[in-house]
Image (cartoon, rainbow, N blue to C red; front, side, top):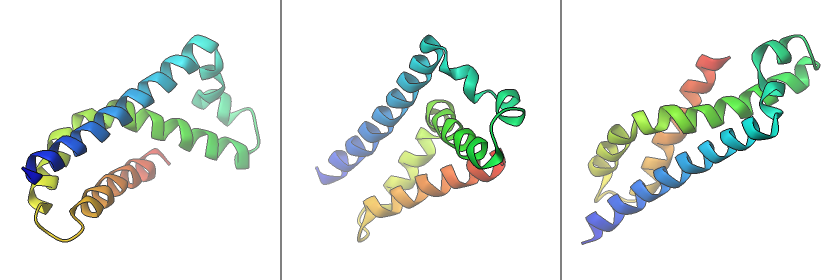
Length: 108
């Protein structure tokens, strides 16, 4: 029973994260603020110390909205493999944070 609960909680957190990312993306588009995060605007607009964090924030939202759903099966499989080990939730969290870290490096 604990296995099912853990798998459900992992799935729940993934779905919530993806939904929030899409809500942020749609809100930015509907309010017209998404143009401020376009790479051409960031390259030729604010100073680099402002542009890089703005880009990275937008990049993380994109990764959560578009890349996380594509990796949900892998994350769930990793969660299954970690099940039964001490602090298995921490292992899944580290896996997801590493996933975001790799995509961040790719974005830079």
